Amino acid sequence: MRKVLPILTLLALLQTGQSFAQAPWIGVHGGLSIPDLSGGNGNQLSSNYTSRLAGNFGVQAEWPVYHRFSLQVELNFAGQGGQRNGIQPITNVPPELQSFVPTGSYLYADFKNKAVLNYLELPILAKFSWGRTLIFYANGGPYVGYLLHAEEKTKGTSTIYGDQKGDPITIQGQPLPPQDFTANTDITSSIKRFNAGVTGGIGLALPLDARNKLFFDARFEYGFIDIQKSSVDGSNNTGNVLLSLGWSYRLGRKR
Image 1 (spheres, helix red, strand yellow):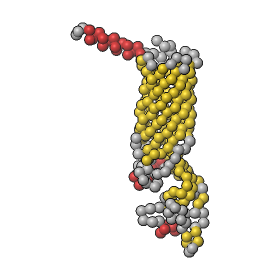
Image 2: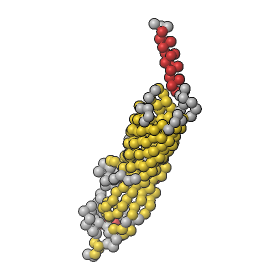
Image 3: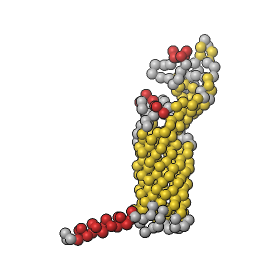
Image 4: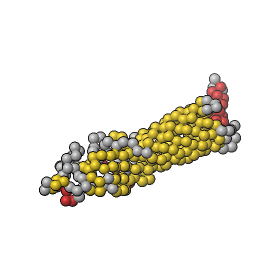
């Protein structure tokens, strides 16, 4: 038995080496990202976000490990964030209106607000495939992200309200004239640089020949880290749905 175990171990290592020696695939992909900012923890500054549309594209490398199982590493530009439309709190209150701000609350206005967060993300995925003419697959694994830039884009004109119900502030019986809230504000310094989470989904690949294949990938992603540096700004997590098309090319020859 003592002689058999080392032989079996050696055979297993040789088999693993042969599996990793299979020719890898490299590819590119791109498509639509539908991100959203979840959470908020009741903070009016970070609640009630809905999805927006963004881009997502990158490069990938896939290493066959054993039969239907492979490992895939990607480097992606990922659009994250969300949007909020309607009556919402304002943070840059004109000095002449500071006295109208209720203690522990905000003044409000009706405008469009879009949080645009751009990340560089590195997912590491386990991938299981089946099929021949059409190859179906499922993948999943962790990812880490690095914030490239964050911006708050606001648009619209509105009078200023004293509460979320839309009761206007009046001075000497007259409502304030509409204010312009159109602006692009860099908020990169308010957002944590690093993010991490999990991603996974399903896909369909169409082999064109022994070296080329096209694929369609549908994936969900969720970040574990609260992105705001200060709790005063609220508490949100990133997340999105990714729909992408791609092309892969096999390097060398399959062994």
